[in-house]
Image 1: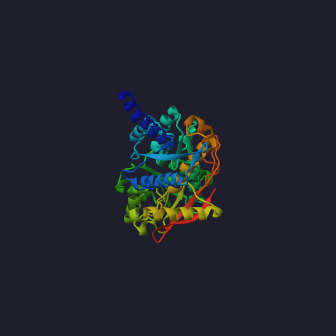
Image 2: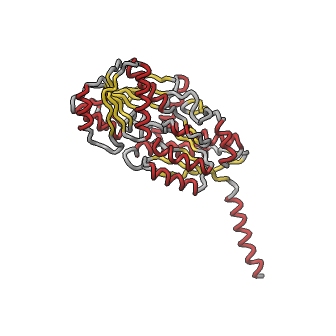
Image 3: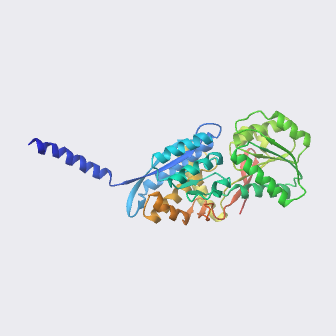
Length: 380
């Protein structure tokens, strides 16, 4: 009698265990800076990852004919390389099926080695440093154009469209800031061999006082200042440029090219002065899909898309598509399918070249009108 009594609860427990295991759980890691100066961008990315996972689960996404449940493991890298590698190892230890992130090149590049060693696919929605894919890690992918294109395009635009002949360059010494500034200089010199780089100055990604470097720049009387860094530094820098009476135009890459820049700098410091580029962009035939996404995002979170949310959303969906194509969420099995995936997303067609860079990546040029970030044109 006692033997049967013990068996019944055991049988019930096994039945529940079987029911619980009927739906496979697919664990996706997301990493971005949700603390620190770039937290508004990190949170924007995190929101989009949540939105994508909720959409996948709501439609009963299937892998190999079975509905699966996607869960997110959210991590904060604080835009700090050491913290980035620490949370990367945490995700590896948690045996995630894939990773979306990181945002900054300075965290994405060192973390990518950890994911590669573990065989875990990684899609960055924002990191633009060429070094990320130059490492030849078959686990590393990105859904935006890299700094070779971004910086080079801005350099050519500065001399050809803005008629800049004397340029000062400032970067924040991060992998991203230094990289995009270097590519800008190369692009400007290629487009106009006689262009003068009259000053090169350096700051940090946490600086707030730029009086010394801007005073040096003012003495060189440049036509244009290029800044490689994030909006949390670019905004206060623009405010001080105006206060010092510097008349130069201002250019920057995607880290500075945000809606909050006008608030951080003041509308008068950006209107008619700033030209910037976002590493991504949609052609006219894709605009409705992007507009619909932005409207849905705003309705859900009560705020506008900051910068890379659409690319995060597409990155999650692209990873899920590769899993479906492979009929498996196991990293080793779906990784080859991710390399050859074709996914029509909010931002356009996602497909990767042999290095993991997006094929035919677009850039969008912006300026500011009445304190609002306003699109000028999309270039490929």
